[in-house]
Length: 91
Image 1: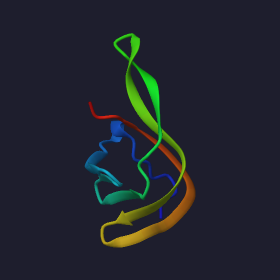
Image 2: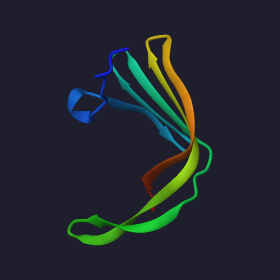
Image 3: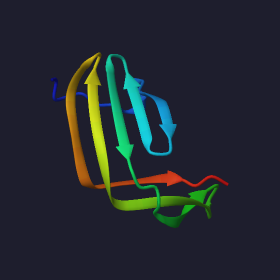
Image 4: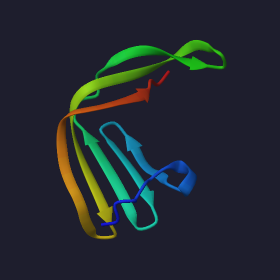
């Protein structure tokens, strides 16, 4: 596995799935899947057009599983009990 693999938006990564409990990113032959079991978190104010008028939800330490694929070959499949993430709350 190439240790320099990165999945930033400026190199063309695409979000192919984003729904409750799963996020999948794809770039060329690479795919990163992230699975979370808990969705609750803390609502925090976030900036929008110069004011703190929208909210995000932040979760600091939840179990998550990560799977990184190159085509049909699994390069990494692991889990963490202490993952964190944030998402925009639906209105």
